[in-house]
Length: 87
Image (cartoon, rainbow, N blue to C red; front, side, top):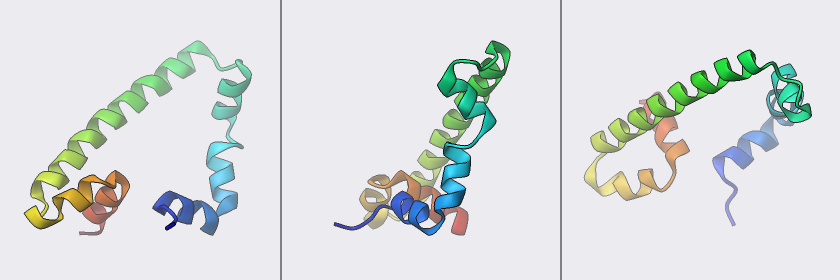
């Protein structure tokens, strides 16, 4: 079974992955329930905007993709984003 792009990235830089997912003050506060509600609300709004914009971006990339590659690209959204950034 092939490793996903995410698995490959995590394997290549375990320390970075740990720092951004496990050793971050905000994430620690969320995990232990001590996050300030205003801070969480700000993050929530920013995350919502990111997801909305990313979905639009991914849709645009897919719409611009060659017809014979659309199924391949749409089956892996992360690869879709990376291909667009690399283009």
